[in-house]
Length: 145
Image 1 (cartoon, rainbow, N blue to C red):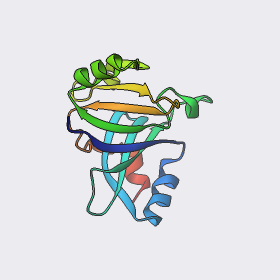
Image 2: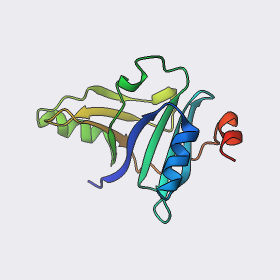
Image 3: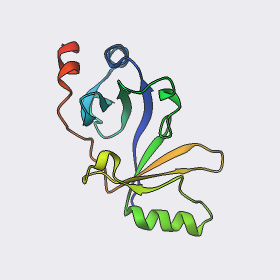
């Protein structure tokens, strides 16, 4: 079973301020996954390692409970065959919090969520999860120039 660390997820309210902060730390945008114009994910990484990323989730329609949404604050592992991984976890006594699904009905992405024994959220991503390369939302492209 080949497993790869994919990303750590953070929910952010101001993508421009967040991107500018992480740029000061030496991270730059290396990818994007767009669910809609106002709900998208940005992937930031250090030069030379575009596959180990910080995933910033932006939901401009998030509302007051946005920071406590079900998937916030997780780390992700690309696990290869997701169904096999979920079956092994079940055999070991761990039930996924969310069974495999396609976020945003995207056929190219299938994930599940599970909690470790201490309650930490882990996203399990099917396949190798190369960093997504969707175009940035128009409003963000203009603001980050």
